[in-house]
Image (tube, rainbow, N blue to C red):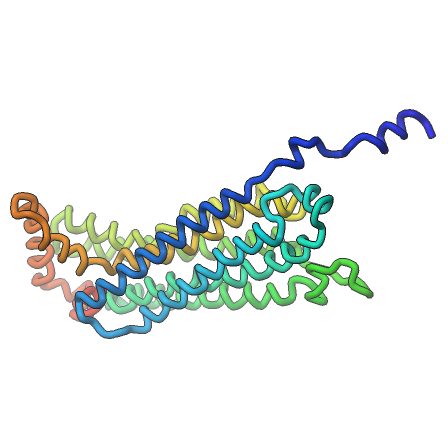
Length: 330
């Protein structure tokens, strides 16, 4: 054997510094932050319900379900970090604990199964608010189309997950007798995210013409547009996540590159959930106003008076009387 070949076979392929690199702590930190935020704002949402003394609605059930699935995403990511080797380079995991790769492979299936409904459910809750408020036939048709697209994308992507590999066990057991084959996971992640971006943009745009045509002050119109715009707070995260699937190859160094995408997979449904709660905190803001000293309350009172005057104007041609009941629920 030549010296060149001997040197090639004896030299380590990876440096020690490379093998020691670890970024799983970023995933853990993100998970902790969003557990706190989601718990806090979902709790505030239902405190606001109690303050307003409104009955339980199916949009509340959607938010509760979204919270469960969002926590499912967080739990799955933590399992991936602590038991699946995510955060280490793939070479490190293969050298030191190759048995963890089975857990990591399973989490590549479990995380999307949690993520898809975690994203869809709060968007459906926000869309339900639109349907209660808008009386214009075109806007309602658009809302129903968006609802259908969100549901279809969620169900279709979840079905695709179960046929991602044939047989499914081949996903985590590549030594399966008879072998198997898998879909292009990068393509699956990319194009499933694209529909989220499209529906976000539509949900952001739909309320704007209605709000602009209302008989209200510019300040009030801007406030209402921003309120409805909260519903698309996850749009930026969805775009970053979508781009990430083009810049990161999940198959090349999966346990390492997965962490950035896991963080975005926690943030995106988390922001959607926060948005569905933020649009319903008006009763708590009113209670805070009542607790403020009189010297600090005047500006808030003036704004609240403007809102009350606005509600008394005849804007039924754009938002029917049902909008009063809808906003009272939120």
